[in-house]
Length: 114
Length: 115
Image (cartoon, rainbow over all chains, first blue to last red; front, side, top):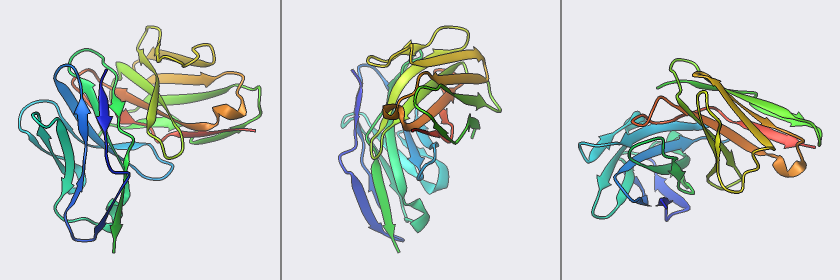
């Protein structure tokens, strides 16, 4: 069975500082990995994905994530946090091939402090 | 990115009635649509996966007779909560994907309150 772990319920970071939101995964075969952001009472917005190719993936709003196969991690990063980045972030994984279901982590609340 | 429209965004219904939620992909053909339920401060729980023109695949523990899913076209899927009860109150989110190599895009969610 596939799974996603987001070890931190909440991450606090000062505005302008770099941020990291952690994610590790477990899947039988090759992973497809995703990051989504959710604002209160809204659906999820896609940020970025890793399917294949370069391990460093760049996405929306200046976010990036690095796929590390040996550590089975896909941490989300941003060089300089904005107050508007404060939201709930979900990491997700699915197994490559076929119409496999996507498994989400429990989410990490990011709080950017002015 | 692609746009998925979910309607209504909020609905309040009486216990025992049925509620239909629509999910539309506006600018792409969604071969696969997913329905999730999200509890407060929790992650998304996949309820079912539907492929256009075929029956939905329900996750274990999800009552298929209570949560009716129809995916009649490549741009529309519906979730009908039948004989709703207060415990069905939740945030329901749909997502749609063009296919296996593509990310899923999400609707804005529907807040269902059963009174």
